[in-house]
Structure formats: C-alpha cells, structure tokens
Length: 228
Length: 385
Image (cartoon, rainbow over all chains, first blue to last red; front, side, top):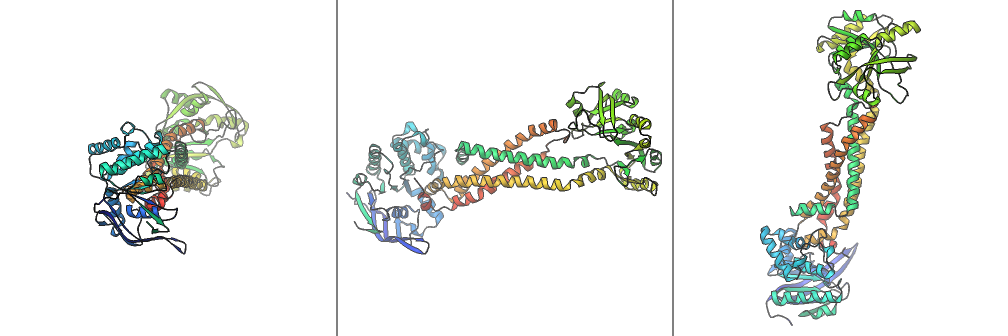
C-alpha cells in the first residue's frame, strides 16, 4: 500500500543507453515516476530490462543521458562526481546481492566505514555502530569477520552499514538473491521493520516474487520502459 | 589509523602471495645490496691507498723486476722519506684453492710504510730478525687456524720449491676496512735462496714502495725517480699507490659496469613481478573499490589504499632484504675471504636498498592505483559474484 507522503524521489523523462563499440544500446527510455517517502518499492522485470541501471541512477552511482532525478529535493543529475560521492555517503544506503563487505574488516569495522567520512568522534561512531548492530540483531557478532558469519548475518551487517548514516533512502539490488529461504525471510522482515519502525524509504530490485510481496508498490520494467 | 589498518590487513590478506612477493623483493634487495657492495669494494683498495706512498715498478711491465741497487739511488731523490721493496711471491698453501696474497718484503721499512698493519712490538721484532720469519693477517690466520710459532710451507710457483716459514706475528688492521688476509715474509730469505739456486734472479725487486715527505710532492718525486733511471736497462714507472691500484681496477672496469647493470636489472625484474602481483590484487578487488566508492569514498581514498598496500609489501621486503644482507656479507667475508677479504656493507648501501624498495613499491602501484581510482562504480559492481 503506497504512502500518501510527498515524493522523496522524483524521476522525470529519464533515459540511459550504453555504447558497445559502434552500437548504442538503449537501456532506459523516458522513465518518469515518483517514490514517496517511507515507501517500499520493488522493481521487477526480466533480465536486461534496466532495473539495476535505474537503481544505480537513483543511487547516484551512474549518470543518466537525459532527464532528471531529484532525491530529497536535490537534482542529482547536476552534481559533479565529487559532489555525488559526498551526497551518496550522506543520503544513500546500499544493500548488495553479495553483501560486498570488506573481508579484512570485522562486522563492527564494516559498519563503521561510512561514518569515517563524517565528523563524528570515535566515541560517537561507536554509539552509532552499536545501535545499528543492535537493530539488526548482531551485537554479539561485532568482532567477527565476514568469513565467520553466515550469508544472512553478512547481509544484516550490510544492512547495518546501509543505515548507520541514517540515510534518506536505501537501495537494495537483489538483497535476498544469495540467501536461503529462511535467511531471505529474515532479511525481508528486517527491511519491512526499517520501513515501518524507522520510516526508511526502500527501493529494491528483485526477481523474487516473495520478496516483492513485502513491498508497498511493485513496478515492472520491460525493455527499459515502465509497464506497470 | 583506520586506513592504515585496512592497508596492512589487505597487504597480507593472501598470506602465500604476500609472503612470496615479500620474499622476492627481499632477495632482489639482498642481491642489489651485495652487488653494490662488491662494486664499492672493488674500489676500496684505491680508496684505502695512502697519498704519501708511491709505487715504482719496471716501466715495461710489472712482470719484470728492478735491480736491488736502485734502492740507494731512490733514497737520494729529494722528497723521498723512506724506501722499501718486495716481490709478489704467488706461493700456494697446500692447494691452489687456498689463495691469499703473499709477498716477500723488506720487513722493517715495509712495516714503517704500512702503519695500518698493526703488530705487537715483540712480534714485529721477531719478524724483522728472523730470516725465515713471516707475518699473516688476522683473518688469514683465523681461517687456517695458524698461531704464532707455527711452521708453514708454501709451494712456490714463480719461485719453484717448497718454502718453509715460521709465523712470527699476526697483524690486525688499524681500520675495519684494512685487508687482514695478506702474508709477508722476509725478502732476504727469498734473495739468499735465489743466490744459491738461480743466481740470475737474485738481487731483483719486483717493486719499490716509496714514502714521500709531503703528499703534495708525489707527482714531482715520481718524475724525479723515473728520470733517475731513464735510458737505463730497467726503466721505471713511478706513480701514486692510488694510481697503481686504479690500474688494476681499470682492467676490470667492464666487469664492474656489467655488475652495476645487473644490480639495476635485478631491481627492474622485481619491479615487474611486484607490479604483476599488485595488478592481480587490484583486479580481484575492483568490486571492493567500487563498494567503497558507493559508500562515498573518493578516488584519492582508493588510490591511497592501493598505493599504501604496494608500499607496505615492498618496504617489508626491503627491510627483510636489508636484514639478510648482514649475515650474507659476513658469510662472504668468512668463506670467500680469498676473493673478498673485506666485505662490509656501508650505510649508503642500506639507504640505496631502502630507496630501491620504495621505488619498487611506487612503480608497482602505478597501474593498479590508477585502475582502482578511476573505476566506474557501475562497472566495478558488475564484477560481483
């Protein structure tokens, strides 16, 4: 069920293509839609439909060819690379399919990473990290390396890392893609909790219909065009 | 501190790969240091030469001798303070592989001219007064277990026969760099034996050593000595001891240049190996660099991490290489003393070793740093799984 809050993400006439040699391959074609604050949106579609590309554009890790993307009122398509990096660190939390934790850092240190770019003191960083690890239920694992954690636990660490800066939006690219059913359910419940208890806005790309069921809104992409 | 922790942990993440890379750098630095030391030591004889000593030899070739009667005429040349003489003996101790320099010298004047060969007064007197007396350097004596009073036999090559000596003294070098592997015996023993056996070879000196009153007179005295014997049957060539030593060194200049080149090639090789290792590592970690960029870290952070890792590995190898250089140099000095009587590693060599390691780290990091810093996030994340 969609929220009636004002949009936090506004996408207008967005297009993106890739060049392969002399060929130009359109990936997204004239996409326009909004995402309300506190919404849990699932993006679905066949492989190659442009879901991950759209997610990357919203997250500011890729640049569109044409169109605008406003996140929290800021048109991120006008930001330079440096500004975009700074903006991402403060406003976007990432949850990847394969967790993308630093293998040589502990769970604590992985979660602390985004805070190193802030002006928080060590003590303040510790408070933030311990708090989010508690939210994801991994306080007793903070000194473990990723290799000592299960897939589900690693994804929870990744979620903790994504929320530690209290970012405006969370983007999740197949967050349950590498997990068994039980772990996947755990992660989806956690994400649901983040939306309902903490008011997070989540944009999730998924192939998994069970994952999509948790979302408020499902949008379908096909050949770079929104079909629903 | 956090990034330093990340860099160090990353550097040793793949333990076997890191160990082998560090070992490779260490061996390269060790080889570089030893080769540089070898080149430096080649010129050590030149550097150790005294400014107030001249060498007079037969102008045609060192192979030819000079009459012993020249000593008195040389003494008359203005600027000459003292004269000594000797012959390269070239004797063999037991086996050809036991090579060490051995000379017949006029003991008193020779020891006066070479104060860097330090002998106890009693031993010095014993050597001077015993016709069959001989003196050996400390390292030489230690190598063969000689003690004062031992009877030693050398098999003559230039002067055939079995030559017996009594070791009357063991000298130590006044400086660490003084050669302690030489063997001297009394010139009179050689001369008297030659008078009995091969009279035509008697009363001949292979070289004269001349002490000058003032080093600044070296050139003038050299010319004066050679003028004295111009147009004689045995014309002389007199030069400073430094020039004399250089003439030997210059014969092997090409070899020294080749060794220097090899030392640089060794560094270039390890640079390439280290660069390959870093390139492999960077390729494997592209997704991590992309992830860090998504979290807001900029190109300079990524560059710092990659660069730092390369420097940590290279400098670790450098330190290990430097540490290994000392026992290696000691081994060479002990086991190969006949070739390298002195093999000390200088502070300059250590600095060059560390500089070489630093350069290896910097060069090896260039491509991976650029790659990590410039990777597009979307491209880097696409490499996951």
